[in-house]
Length: 431
Ligand code: PGA
Ligand code: ZN
Image 1 (cartoon, protein in one colour):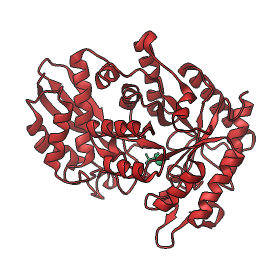
Image 2 (cartoon, protein in one colour):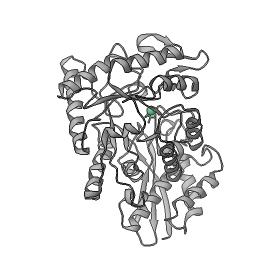
Image 3 (cartoon, protein in one colour):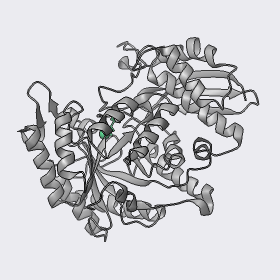
Image 4 (cartoon, helix red, strand yellow):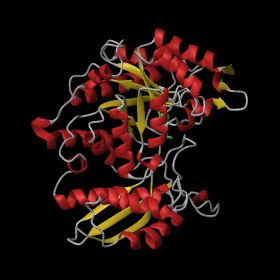
C-alpha cells in the first residue's frame, strides 16, 4: 500500500504552544495523522525537538523549520514507499537525518511521520492501531499512574518534587481504576478546598500544590485515599516522579529543595527517599537521582529496588543504548517510554522490548505538553507494557488517553486482560 503524500502543518498543544501535525495519504485514499507532544522537564539526552527560535514568532516556539524538513526532505524520500514497512520508513528517516540525536531534521519532524504512517497502515489494514502495532498480540490493559498534584517545572516550581501520583494497585479492572481515581482525585480537591488551598490545576491537570514542604503532599495523598474510602497501600498506593535532574547541581554534586532551602548530598538524598518509602505507601519512584549521578542510582536501587518500582525517565530517554547500559549496571527496574524522546515508533517499540526482555517494566508515558492524539494508549496495549502515565484525571488532552483505553477494552471484547498491581510481582520480590 503506497504512500502518495505526506504533509505537515502547525497545530497547538495543551499549553497553547505550537507543535507539528503530519498527515499521510495512501493510494486508496485512506489517511493517518500524528500529532507530536512536547516536554517541559526534558532530559539532556533526549532527541532534539526542532523549534525555530525566532523571538518575533510564537516567542521562538514555532516549528516551521521542522515542517519544511518534512515537506522538502522527508516527504520526497518516502512518497511511493509501502506504508506497511514501518521499520523501513523509520530507518530511512534516521539515515536521512544522519545524526545521533536527530538534530539535523528534528525528532519532531520524524515522529509526526512515523506516527501518521502507523495510523494510516492500521486504517489500510482495517484494524485499530493497537491491533496493527501489536500484530494481534497486544491485549493487556495498562495500570494507570495518575497524577493528583503537579509540581516542579509544571507548576512554576511551587514544589521541588514534580509529580505526586496514585496507582490503584488493588483495582480488579480498568473500570475500577477509573472509579477509584475519580474518587481519590476529587477527595483531594475537597480537602484542598476545605483548607483554603484550592488554586486550580497545573500543566498535567493535577492540583496546584500549595505547601510548605515536599513531604506535606504525601500526607494529603494518604488522607485523600482514606477519605475516598480506600486503604492506603492495599487499595491505592503513591507514586512519585522526583525529576531529580532538575534539582541537581552538577558542580557540587548536591540536590536542592528550594521550597525548604535544603541541600542534600547523594547519600542524604537517597536516605530521605528511603525514609519517605518507610513512612508512606510508596510503590514507585521515577528519576530519584539525576541522569548523570549513576552512583546515586545504584545506591537508591540497592536500598529500595526489591520493594519499590524505580523508573528511569531522564536517565534513559527511551534510548536503546542508554537502557542497555542501565540494565548492565543495574540502575533501575523500570523505564519510562516517551515517543518523542527518541523520535520514531520503531525505536520506541524496540526500547519497550529491550526493557521487557531484561525483566524490567516499561511505563508508556505522555508529555506535559500533550494533544488530543491518543496514540500512546494503543502503544501501551499493543506492547503489553502494563502501565500508562498520562498526567492527571482532568483536562481533555489527558482524559483522551484514559478514555481511549476504555474504547480499546470494548474493541478487545472478551480478550482484554487486566492484571493491575500484580504486574509489580515481576520486579518486586519483597512487595
Ligand atoms: P515532561 O514531564 O513531559 O515535562 O518532560 C514528564 C515527566 O517528567 O515524566
Ligand atoms: Zn519524569
